[in-house]
Amino acid sequence: MDRKRWYERIPHPVTMLFGIICLATIMSYILPAGMFERELVDGRQRVIPGTFSFTEQQPVSFLDMFVALAKGFKTASDIIWVVFASGIMFGILEKSMMVENAVGTLVKKLGLQRKYVIVVVMTFVFGMLGVAVGYENNIAMVPIGAMLALALGGDLILAAGMSVAAITVGFGLSPINPYTVGTGHKIAELPMFSGAPFRSALCFCGLALLAFYNVRYFKKISNRPSELSLGLDTSGFSLSKGIEKYTMSKNNWLVAFIFLGGMGVMLYGIFVHHWYLQEISAIFVMIAVAAGIAARLSPREISETALTSVGVVAPGAFMVGFATTIKVILEMGQISDTIAYQLSEMLTSLPVLASAVVMSIAQCVLNLMIPSGSGQALATLPVMIPVGDIVGLTRQSTILAFQIGDGVTNLINPTLGGLIAMLSMCRVPFDRWLRFIVPLMLMILFMSWLFLMVAVMIGWG
Image (cartoon, rainbow, N blue to C red):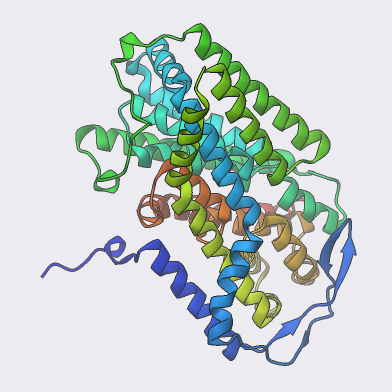
């Protein structure tokens, strides 16, 4: 019998996450419980360095492991609802034919002979959305990438690479990421978003590598369809007629203006009034209702489309809550701080270059337990910054090591609700996503570590 290749051994995403849930429960019996003291800063709890102490063991019982499922869904309720809201909005936009006609008209104008250029440009466009707009805020944009990829002759895996991966890389390596870089600079008492040119160079190189990877994959499937895309549901994403037949009607333009106007209001609220998931979800639903009325859909058509759309994105919404259970169990067992403390202690005995890379690797590990960028920053940077000072790292380099560990591994983080949500919007199962993205993640990670070592050697910051 032929040996199975590595990716053929990847379990089903639900099985994978349940295995991690069981492992986290077992770790609560093995690792000693411990906690840092915390202080309230700008409404957020921040770790106080040097205050770690071991506490009484808090093992998670067999019953509590399953109770944590309900708590995980409760914790992730905002992300779950934004998945449903964005699914409903796209379902109405799809029913109006605006998205299909817009994508078909765009491809007709640009020409299929420029399809590789379009993939490169759209990779950077989605990447810049991640840089400037945020992460979960872009969930509703992913289906547009799916329709565009299929219109160019690609598949849903290419669509995910062009949209989900680009948003993730752009957000993770953004020089102006308020959750990681911004929070880190506050903790380190550095000028806000200082060192932006160096981080911008890293972000550009990451997106350029992704664009090359996407084009390479596109050329590969142009000759032979990939097994990664076999059986994936493209209904509603595929164009229903030839490219030359597409045009935008007046009604399509009206629906498009409603969508763009709603997104403009959302961005204004995010940047000016600091809106987040609840307000974003509300805007998505308002766009859906207004678009349905503008498209002259009957109340029954709007209602049936909404329920159908919820059914399409429901598996992804379930995975978001399921993944959040891992974080809940680690908190119940009080072992998250223990892991962070032990990793920081390990760094003090390493040479400066090695400590920078190992610090980044440590943040990769911690990212699986604390998927929130700002949450991870508040939990680990107050510990890592003093450690960096001891081993000879500048504070900019320490924050860069944290940003790389948090940002790049977001590409494969099963506990990151936003990633699971966007993959569900693109209808790409997590196991197939891993087969596609792991080689790229490793390439970006090694490239980022080279940037990190250069930062250490030049005393950046």
